[in-house]
Length: 93
Image 1 (tube, rainbow, N blue to C red):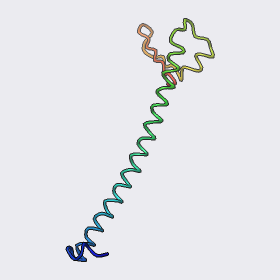
Image 2 (cartoon, helix red, strand yellow):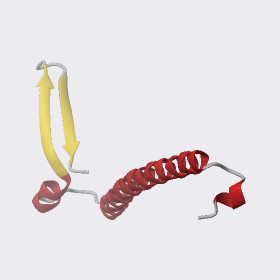
Image 3 (cartoon, rainbow, N blue to C red):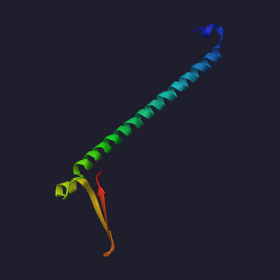
Image 4 (cartoon, rainbow, N blue to C red):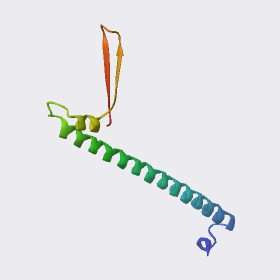
């Protein structure tokens, strides 16, 4: 290389080259990290869309059948006292 026709020294050239190489590695690492985050966000969006579809599909039912209950509910907790029952429904979505 002509190093800009002698305007910069060989040491300056190598310093610039090394800085550019380091920046390139850092940028490649950042790109891979952001691509990974993007895939994760895409998965979250797909899960939310699926949940929205389920909620929309079952939002107007008047009585749950056994199959619907098994599909929608993960488990049910019943607690509290005899006079003050607490029921918590844990949905699958």
